[in-house]
Amino acid sequence: MTVRVDNSFSPMPARIRGELERRQAMAARALNYHQTFLDDQLRAILPHDLILIGAPTGIGKTDLALSIAAANASRGHRVHYFALEAEPDELERRTKYALLAKEAYRMRHPHAHDLNYTDWLLGNCEHVVGELNAWADQQILASLGNLQTYYRGEKFDHADLARYVLEHHKQSDLMVVDHLHYVDSDDDNENRGLAEVVKTIRNVSLNVGKPFIVVAHLRKHDTKTKQVIPTIHDFHGSSNITKICTQAITLERAHDIEAPKWYLAPTYMAVLKDRRSGSSPFVAVVNFDRRSKSYDDTYSLGRIKSGKWDPLKVGEAPSWARSHRPMDMRKAEPSAQRDIPAPNASS
Image (cartoon, rainbow, N blue to C red; front, side):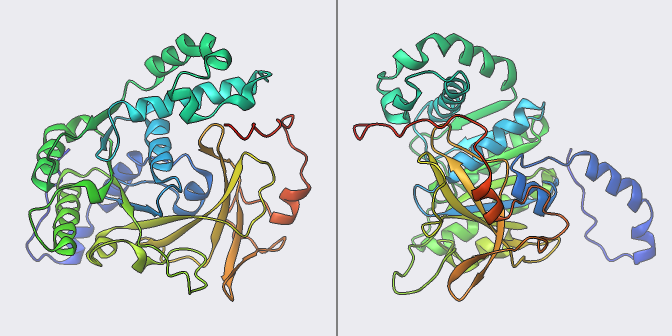
């Protein structure tokens, strides 16, 4: 649906008429992140949201964006994903590998520890998942028909993006741009070019009334600083990128947190901007499962104090943190799944 904005001045009492019905209609179109920390803190994705996801290279920006897209598509929502950095079929292969890995570990396959994405791409994991190929294809066929992917050609600029959005927005409930820095610009000034791209996305989002998730690079950290998580100023490019977005989410490897299992990568997840509720002092530690390339269903909240992540004590968590598990309790919890030995060095 196209949103018509009244650009004239009008008294507030006139504008408030019908507010409840409009708010209820907006709430009916809300989507979830299907990631517990983000759903707990941000509650929902609303029609005009422009959500920025930033992380250093290799930390899992695409994995998070793709998981949000796939989870919504599997629940009947229509998602259009601009895979501007990926090679052809990469999103489909990532999705299939995650399904295969989860199933192999669920079945306790004796060679599940041989699984890794690179060897699977090269065809060296068929002894583990070969019999599951048809099953995984059927899962994708049955549940992800609403997830449409676009891979860029030689050129893709902000005008191309606006054109594709306007062509497909009536058949979409969520659009993902992965990622921002792969939208071409004719401007010699990179920051100015990025600002134009973000402005285009924001204007189109407001006009068509559909939410956008935009993946972006972060600048490299200054190793001399004791910075634990990225700041809002670490998004690479113009400051307009973060000024225009409604939510800004960052990821960073939690190098100072001991991994409870060899296959888990503790990751800091923070909401640096939320136009609805304001900034938050809390930073979550979420375990990323390298086997299935997915995030855990629970998290531990803490605050950054004196250059370190300080976990909340029992009873300190805010009421919205329904899936928070205090770090000391998480360490004491027995594993729900039989531990699998670490893979050989060759994998």
